[in-house]
Picture: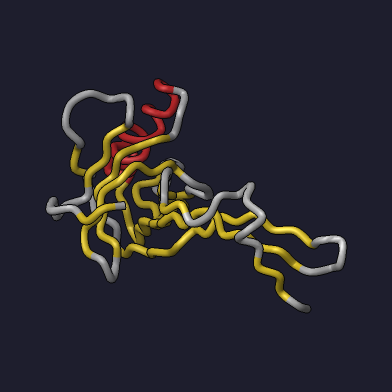
Length: 157
């Protein structure tokens, strides 16, 4: 993750050429968090050992209401079709990250990505949805070597 001077939401699959595309509608809210990757176990004395390995940012784009057309454009064309085409879920995104500002980086589409229908029409079609798209940073910040025994931290229970 690095700070971005582009103040809009953009997306580009890592295998696409050209410039990133601005997303058709912006999230209602953005939830930031850190995804801490660690190697943990109990040793033969029953002590819990934890080696923090990597700290990755996680961003959730939340849409309280998104039209069917915008959802098809964003999730269908810019995300799902690219995953199907390139057989991977890695994207460059530019997004707002509360507390930091706009950031950019390489992220993968996390789970769950879900959309729920909000308003159906008499013929069974749906015109409006709510939903979430989860992004998890690919590289993150390396904290420790996972095979090193010098960084073990025993925690007494």
